[in-house]
Structures are given as C-alpha cells and as structure tokens.
Image 1 (cartoon, helix red, strand yellow):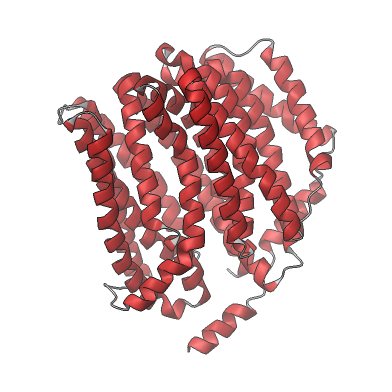
Image 2: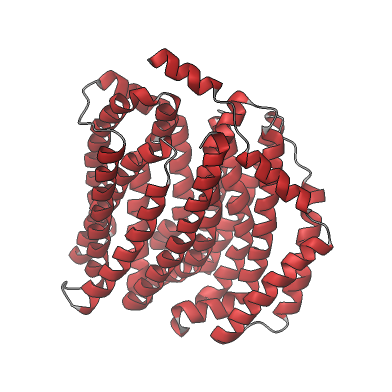
Length: 495
C-alpha cells in the first residue's frame, strides 16, 4: 500500500485501538479511584505524575527521532536501533535513580516510596516498549502497536482485579503498582518478539559518537515534549506540595475524564504525522489544504465535546467515582473548556514538527508551562483543585494564542472566525437547552448522549458547516498515491 493509503489504514487501526484502549484505561482509573479512596488515589496520582515525567525525560524525543531516521533509510535500521538501545539503557539507569531520590524526599512513608520505585521500573518498561515499537511506526506497520495498546489494558485491568482481591500485597497501592509493572513487562516482551521476528534483530551498539549525536538532535523535540508533559502534570505536582492529597485526588478524578477525550486527537495525529512530514518535504503545496481540513475537523469534534462535558459534569463524576468525589465537579466544568485547546494544540504541535519548526513548538510549550505554573501557585492555596483547573485552562489558552502567531510565520492561514462561529453558536444553543435539565443517572446520560450527538450532527448539515464535498476532499488527500521519489532516492543511495 503506497503513500497515504497506508496512512488511512494506520489511522483506522490506531483510532479503533485508542477508542477501545482509552475506554479500558478509563475503567482502570475508575477502579483505582474506588479501590484506593480519595487520599490514596491522590498519592497514586502524584506517583504517576513523577514517573510519567521521568519517562519522558528518558525518552527526550528519541523515539520520534527513530521514526524519522529509520523511515528515511530503512537499510540503516539495525545500526540506528543498536545504538539507540545502548543509549536507552544508560538513560534508564539515570532516570530510575532520579525517581528513587524524588520518592525518598517527597513521599511520607516507606510503603509509598516502594510504590514509587515499582512504578518507576514499570514506566521504564513502557519506555523500552516505545523504543521497540518505534520500529513498527517507522515501517508504517502500526497494527502491532494498536493490538498491543488494547491487550496491555486488558492484562492490566485483570491484574489489578486479581492482585487486589487475592490480597497478595500489604496495601492496595502496592497491588495496583505491581499490576502496572507486570503488565508493562508483558508489553515490553511483546514488542521485542515482534521487532526481532518481523523486522530486524539488533544488540547493543558501540558507536558512542553516533548515539551522542542522536541525543543532541533529539534535544529540540525532547525539550518540547518534556515541557509539554510537565505542563500536563504540573497541576498534580503543585497540588501535592501546596494542597492536600485529597485535593490531588479530586483534581485527578476530573482531569482523567478530560484525558480520555484527549486520546482522540493523539490517535488521529499519530498516523497523520508521517503524511504531513512527506507533504512538507515533497509536496508543500498540498499541506495548507490538508491542514485546513484537519483543523476544521478537530474543531468540529472538540467544540461539542466541551459542551457535553460541561453539561454532564455533575452526573459524570457521580456515575464514575461516586458521591465522595462530588467536590471535583467545579474542576471538571472548568477543564471542559480546555478540551478545545488540547485538540487544536495537539495538531499544531505535529504541524510544526512536520515543518521542521520545533522551535515554535518549544516556545509555545514553555509559555503554556509558565502560565499554568503561575496561575497554580496563585490559586491552588486558596481554591485547591479548582485553582489547578484554572491553571490548566489558561495555560492551554496561552499555548493556542502563541501558535496562532507562529502559523503566520510558516504561511499557514486559517479563517478562525468563519470556521468557528457556526459550530460554537450551535453548541451554545444545544448546551443551554440541556443545562436547563441536565441528565441524572445512567439511563438519562445515555439518552442525553444520543440526543446531543444527533442534534449537533444535524445542526452541522443544516448550517452547512461542512458539505459532502469537503469529506470527499479530505479522503482524497488521505488515500491518493503520494510521490515516493525521495524515498526511492534514499534506497538507491543506500544499496
């Protein structure tokens, strides 16, 4: 399958797996929240925030660099991966030490510190899985990644249930962390077997100069990714310092709802990134139309999701977490507005990387982190979880505004007012009617979801927000045969 036809296949596979896996991930979060209670769930969320940031520091853009370099010349895949493997293990040891030190000085009990170290090993197993899975991405065979994402969540869900109910560990926190460790190790073994049997075999490389150069090349992307992930976790980290464990648990409960929604743009951008990179390099005249259609689609999806979560916030919190988490409702209503920013900012980040303008991505990420942190420091001591939610929202807004400025620098224009006005007015009308009588209970939530979705889709066609011709145009850009001249030249030079 040539060109973007493969992209469409990967898009379908990844989107389906993110949908199923995302649902399972949310069920896992709900189970952990209910098993641990508000305070211990706050501790678990704090540990997860620390280890997630450390995982990204270990990665530091290497996996995206692997995809780019191997895709350019697959004949060098073995050489590249062998040296990346050596580098990855060195970074892993450094990061595990860092996790242990942070746990020692920031957590109160030996049990919590042990849980943090277990989770540190677990996320490093995930890191090495991502390193191996980058080979599948580079060869544009993302079905392996899609299968792994779902199976991993099934295994994790089963292990949490078993470890908790069999009382194999001294606390629920340790049981859940051990479940993550075992599930992540299973995922690591899977990718090692897939890559070695389906693609390439490689051991530890010794070209330290090349490995060092890879690390330096990864710095702009890696710094941006680390800052971006830190921005997503800074609220939890600052709540842990400036507020109580209960406040961390309440914010995490609200934010996990938004994170489930955030999987949608990630699932779409992942397979679109190679296509945008090829367009930027080989057919730059096609990129503006592709970008415009994609951004319109992101807005059309994210705007109603914002209204849906805002209206349903009270019922969603009670249904998912129970009455002990009702104080998280105001935070979720604020975070609902951040959904639009999370969608659009995800796409803009990948666009800048495809264009080789990682500096814009880095500057926007730094702005977002600075604003988010400042608002958190000012509001968390007085407002707790709600203050952290305001920090997230205003941080995403600053990211978005700065990206609009940068778009003009790369000659990518977008008619924001013309494209936004009708979907926003439609969403406001539907959400206002729904807010007068918000859903209560499971049955009403299901019926409301159906009515909300049907009303919005019908309104899009009535207001002619998009036409069937637009859909055909987007599909044509995805499925048409792309020029492979550049890749052919690389292959010829490598043979």
